[in-house]
Image (cartoon, rainbow, N blue to C red):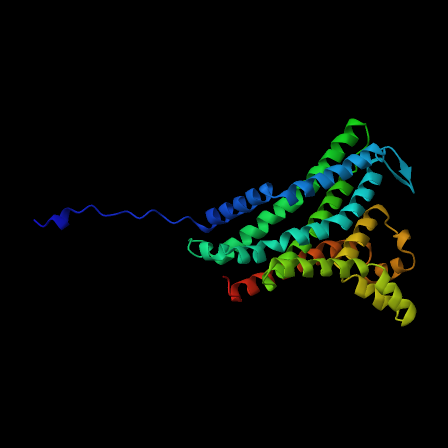
Amino acid sequence: MDAQTYRTPVRMSPQPGRMALLAATIRLDIAEAFRARWFHFYTLVFVAIVGILMSFGLTESRVMGFTGLSRTLVTYTQLAMAILPVFVLISTVRTIAGDREAGVYEYMLALPVPLGVWYAGRLIGRFIVATAPVALALVVTLVWGMAKGANVPWTLVLLDLAFIVMLVWCFLGLGFLISAATRTTDVAQTVAFLVWLVLVLALDLVLLGLLIRQQISAELVVGIALMNPLQVFRTGSMLLFDPQLVLLGPAAWTIFDVFGEQGFLVWSFAYPLGLGALSSAIGYWLFRRSDLP
């Protein structure tokens, strides 16, 4: 008989599934971040913030009616609002633009990894990397407070952590959008810094100038302000500790008339979540349509 009749069939190794490829991409992104200096500095900043708050005894102080860990959470939240966006933007915009400059896509396209899986893996991995130091610092604060015998407001802690996570997600999506829309790392970082600067200026200075010089109605100014994710985060976090929003003055009545207290809390979570998801989706669309190499 012909020798080919007895040839042993060659068995092809099964291709890994999408979930396995996604998990591998996430691990790769996390390992890459752990080797980067910016992640070490990013973690050190938040640990140092917690150390400074503890050294000043904010867990035991009483300021404007806030006591113990509530006062610490208020301060920590406001500091996170100032630091998180610029850190997340500057570190994230290098993801796609940096890989394009380094020629990583030519190697990636030779691997059996779909573009959607690779993009989602980088997005999820960077989200974990950006959230972990913030959550770790908050856990350290809670452990310190409980060791000192302070009462832990668990509802406020969980809501505050959810606000910070939504802030990270929002600016992570914006960072991926900027990274996919730009060709070089220098341009991406410049655009990211300008976006952060515009959002910071829009918190108070620009809107107050419009209100004073152009005599724009307060309702319109408040409506424009609430399109700014930083302002939404700031107001929502204030609402947790100051249900009447006394610090906002007359603008609080406009917010309550439109949303109500519970409605604005829902908006404070839904808007950053939706903005981050929309930005990352547009970034993926641009990523697929672009010339990858």
